[in-house]
Length: 170
Image 1 (cartoon, rainbow, N blue to C red):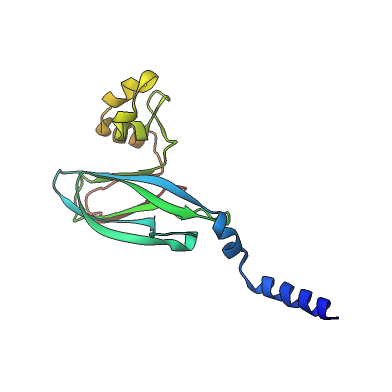
Image 2: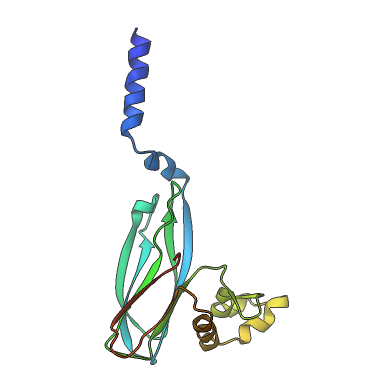
């Protein structure tokens, strides 16, 4: 009888604990990239999702907002666990500026000829061997290409717009 009661207590206890919390220990760090361009030296406010130090669960991701000077590039770390993919995004706030444009992407995003990845353009020191030609591609060319293919993670401001947001997974 004591064994049956002990088993029932264990079952009820497990039912009260979130499965996500149990799975969280098996989560993974994940990286995505943001790039904002425009008039050099101009200041804009950006927001994005980033994991907090010592992250162990997707619950440790938080929205970060900061004022940055253009051009701005950053590799952003998030944490995913329990099958949850965090909402990776880039939001830019500017003062009626039509030169500002931005992009959010992951390391797999191909560019132009299909062999170069966008990350190779932003980290030209990795462009070696058959990828050596990638280091000569400009960031402006990348942005123009992403605009031309209507990449969902690309944004460009038009006259009168002050806030735009794009997501990595749309």
